[in-house]
Length: 392
Image (cartoon, rainbow, N blue to C red):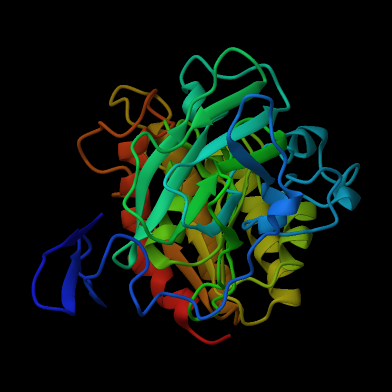
């Protein structure tokens, strides 16, 4: 979270992580420093309309999809390329059709925003994760130099969903938004609706030109069990660091398969974050961690790699404590073996404080709530930030 204190312009922002940033106080929306000189507006002639509806509807694909590592996909919002079908295990391929981590950034002067989207699966929610996170949309606005939540798209009882993303009329002005797609469902079509006299444009490139941070792992990486789709921890870190993120979390299926290492190595990443231990046994960690990293390193000799230990399960009487201790022990041994073998830019994050110390960060002892995801992001941030900023 970023707390802004109004003062003379410009002002100093102190984050909850003790970091300072400089921003300029201006009207709600773009500050002069962030206003792009030229943005690519969409042609309103390509918008569609509905009978009795005064909105113009635009296909979000015209705005560009951020967080997608490959463009040669079977469907527009898949997370793996079509050529991975039959190469990765079937459950991984099925989960790759979930749109976790994908977002659309755009600029508009619209005073209100609506969305229509069609979901792949009628399973809109789970018993421990609400439909707003499984199948909904999540809207953020760039405000005073930081990303702020502003609206959510709730689903009804059908795979065909429509929602007003902004509940109140905003003051006039051009703003940049980020719209996050469902975490545990896929989409075949998403449209944004704005008043006919409003303008819609692609967002400008992110400042700094930093390449995406790539996250690989389990249901926790994918976003289970966030209440909103923007609350998966890779997305939180993407907003805090203002960098693109690629979410390659696969629920129950992130055990460092070597074919996934080869696919990850295709991505020109600023850093790789590997968080697969909750889906692994200690024996699998001992067998797979070293060759997984070696596969990445052969193709990406200088890209930083961050290994993350297994979370500490939150039920104090849970007999899995010995299991996660053993897995973390094997990961530490793999890390030491790799570093002794000359693997550079390899980094390690212990699990001691990933979920906090009060055991209040999960829905079931394992899967984080939004509080848990914030805590994970806060633990990763000081390690990841210097890695993505470093030249490679």
